[in-house]
Length: 88
Image (cartoon, rainbow, N blue to C red; front, top):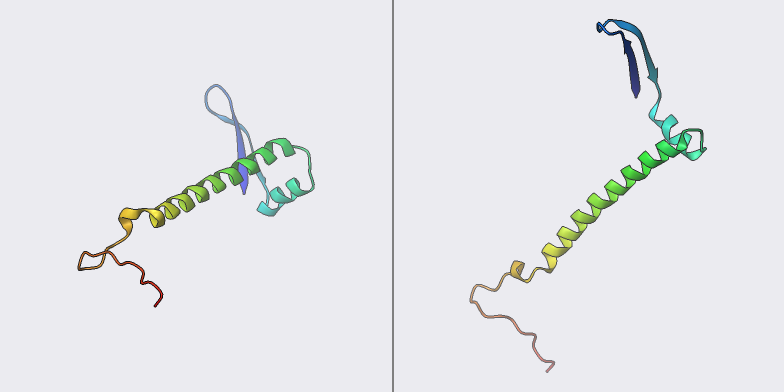
């Protein structure tokens, strides 16, 4: 993961350019060890987890709803509903 910062003057000429590179595990390690800047990074992680949960919940809910929908139940070919037999 890398981030590049470019400083330009009024005419659009590049004055300064610097690139910072970090491995992804360093980002998570910063959260675990509570390094400075944790507030912004922790908030981003919480947003990510919240969005993942919301998407998972919607998929689960829609799948569950499809299973419980009575219109989705098919009837036998003869059109008669089956009733459970009484114990003989």
